[in-house]
Structure formats: C-alpha cells, structure tokens
Image 1 (cartoon, rainbow, N blue to C red):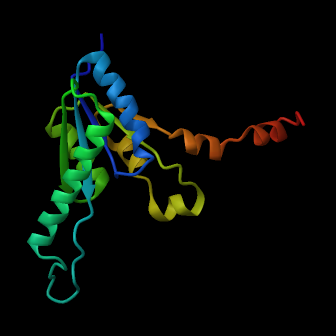
Image 2 (cartoon, rainbow, N blue to C red):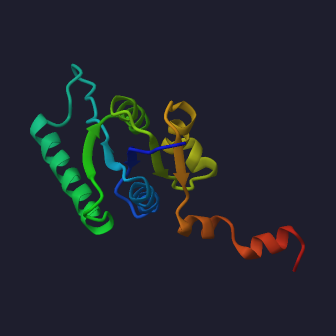
Length: 165
C-alpha cells in the first residue's frame, strides 16, 4: 500500500502553480500528510569583474522574506488550517533545488504544475518540470492547469483532425 506522509509542492507563485497545489491539498487531506511549499529564487548574477555578486546579502534576505510571505499568503488562501504545511524558500537552479530538497526531506511525492510551453519557447527556456521528472528519484506528479489544457487542445482542433466537421 502506498502511503504519502510528506508531499512537496514546488511553486513559482504563478496562477498556473495553483493547479498543483489543489491536487497536493487533496492528497494531503486524504493521506493526512504534511505539505511543503517550495519556492526557488534565482541566484544573484555574477559580475564579470573579479567574480563579484550583483546583490549584497541583505537584498537576498529581503527577497527571501518577500517570497516567504507570498508562500504564506498562498497557504492562507488555499490550504485548510487543519493540513500541516511548511513554506520553504531556497536559492539556486529550480530543478536542482527541488530534487535536493525532496531527497533531504524524504519526500514521498512531488506535485508540480507544468506551464505548457512548446516549440521554441520550450527549447529556449527549458522545462523545470520535465527536468525534475527525468532526474528525480522521488515520484513526480505533473499537473497541466485547466486554462492550458483548454488553450492547447480545443474541441475544434479535435473535430478538424478527425474530419468530423
């Protein structure tokens, strides 16, 4: 029997990531599991001169506090008070930090949204979800938000492709 005690929900704080949170909350309630909401901030850029960082540590701390507050707001709006949920902010490459956190915290399931990028945008920007799915040792459930499902696959397209029209 599969038991889920620790569920990780990576988020970029966008509307799309709420679809994954909805699933994670459902699993959390069903299995009485603890949720971890993880936001991964980009590392500060390295300046070409003498390998200096662009932002002082105080700026990074302020940004981390803002991200933590944004996670808490999401939790207040979308996670029932009875469900234990821990907000976490990390800095680094998102896919790497998600995998690292999942292993370190002994996560049973990662639930994350996809953004539905295709074509050149997917090639140029890459896909955090795809990278995590390919390289994670922890099971990963990816959720395509309904807005994207509807914009990618329309009934008219199906009818045209199947020559039903």
